[in-house]
Length: 232
Image (cartoon, rainbow, N blue to C red; front, top):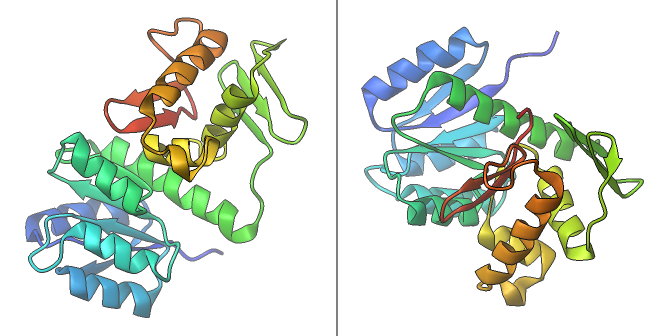
């Protein structure tokens, strides 16, 4: 029998720690705790959790600094939970290496879904068993055979549109920032060219979405980036 995943919660609010402990242990997770950023980095190195749940407003280090320090030696998935809901904080944390960002207050279902996505993605990276097929609703992407279908019909994409879609399909359910997508699709010299991304994403949506203005598959986090829905 597999042991339950260890989650390191780096959070200085004792009420939040108690609430999350009840929620997550009821779901079968084992919780480790740290009240400061420095302690969190030490615990992450010593205990090697399967996932880090991180608040940004810590008493000693900013949470983004914690992300940078952990990312210097570990690919452990990091899900941010923070009262900082503005887009600039989300972008900063995601570009620093966080896997996802959940704004406080959040629903239990949303948090659990984000944890499952992050753990599932980490497992595929760790085992080298990245899926070659993606399916959500009527959208199907075959990365090996290099085809895209919607409701069983082949969809013809330009090379840029295909690269955008497959980049999202390799990280289903995860938020990818504008900079991350621009770097992956166009290269590091184009990370400030958001207009490229808007134009090609609009064209891609017109080809795969029944209602491009109300997308089912490629979801937008305004000012932050895009997420490919796993189960529209």
